[in-house]
Image (tube, rainbow, N blue to C red; front, side, top):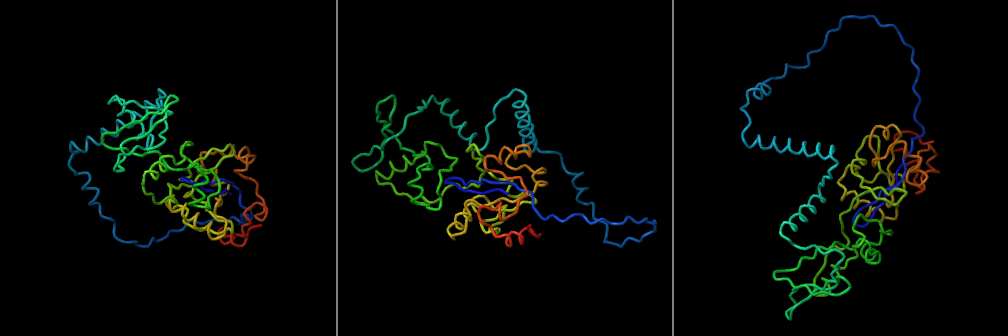
Length: 324
């Protein structure tokens, strides 16, 4: 079983995998000899048409646009192969976006200042933002912009006082966000008259918290066979394969009801764990993870294992077998 927890800008899944108790034993059967006999198969309908296959075989050759698409695919496969052989690092999704922006800055000879926080915005007599004050090399510099100022400083992931003000059900500092994300940019905008909205929202994502404090996204694990998620009462509260934003919102709303949903529990059995990837963990990792409190691979009674006081009767309805 696996605890599911949640964080600002991400949700946290921390917990245990356990083999289910009360699995019925196979019933022995007597093997009887079988005598071959002719059988008449029922007519299931007309033979399906092969018109589609014939049309595909006689389809026109690829157009130049189609060939370009195939060339892009071959190029991508080659890049992946080359990266694997020569140890090149490939960036994808958000990392690729940031890498491309950095490349554009270099191509335009735009300097990139690190360790240079913006402390306040500069405005003119009409209140129009014209620049910002930046701390750099031990002093303050006033940077003026000709066309505008973009605030892309992130949220307040790690300002727990502010977070609890807008979403009290989140108690711990669990976030995938930048450790420096304390809401400085938002405060600077408010100071010069900027308005804010949706401060109780974020990019929510269920995740697992390993014993070393490392957080890991939980995407495919929630939709694998032989696995389901329950709250502190042992009840399913959402389709496990739901979009991660919907899943996290269900955790928040459930927590507000007074029933523990943060954390909640991912229940699976050892056969499913062997067959499917669970947070990149192997079965050999279970003992080490168990010592850290993230995984419990011992078949124990639900009354003892469910530290969230889940009701065994509710859990039995979900599993479909008696919980011993």
